[in-house]
Structures are given as C-alpha cells and as structure tokens.
Length: 141
Image (cartoon, rainbow, N blue to C red; front, top):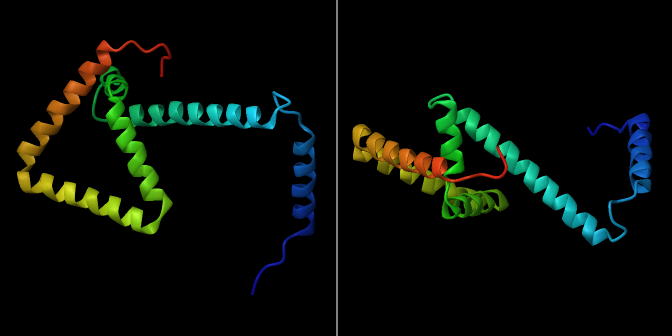
C-alpha cells in the first residue's frame, strides 16, 4: 500500500522550485553557470575528501605526517583511485570487479605474512609522506 504524498509538502516543494527558478545565475549563459557550479562542487568535494582522509590517517599518524601523506599522493594514484571509484559506482558488475580486486589484494597481502606486508606498506607510506613534505601546496588543505 503506497502512501499518499502530503499536499502541504508538495506545495512547499513546488514553491521552493519556483523561487529557485527566479534566482539569476552568475552569468547570463547557462553553460557557464553549469561549468562554475561543477568546479565549485568538485573543489569543495576535494577539500572535504582531503579533510576526511587526514582525519582518518590522524588516528594512526601525527597530524603533520597525515597531511603530508595526503599531499604526497601522485597523479597516477589519484587517477587510479578516481577510475576505480567510478567503475565501482556505475554498475553492479563494476562493483563486483573492483570489490573482487580489493579482496584479492587483501588475500595476497595476508599470504605474504603480516610482518612483510606491514613493512612494505609502511615503507610506501613513508615515501609518500616524504614526497608530500617536499611539495609546496598553494592551497593549505
């Protein structure tokens, strides 16, 4: 049995939509407004993502080291991470493939042994933090 939408809520949503339609964009060109909106959303998303990553890394590493780890990520790492996330979120088969790859990598790391996997991972994290410490960032994130 489906619930009927409240007419009060529907009227409020409609009124809000009408008000939003009246708000002028930054530019008279709608494509420019779309581009600017996209840039703002992506930039804000990146700043938020970096803050969350730093916070999560801050539970294991110092605040400065966590910041350097995030800052030291290479372009290849960024592109691969973005591509995998996009593949995983666009389709169920993509999610299965990416999830299966993550499971395979985890099992491979466990097969190597805890000590070997930890030392290899710690070495790579240290290298990434060193690269981040050397890099100058015009936007402090």
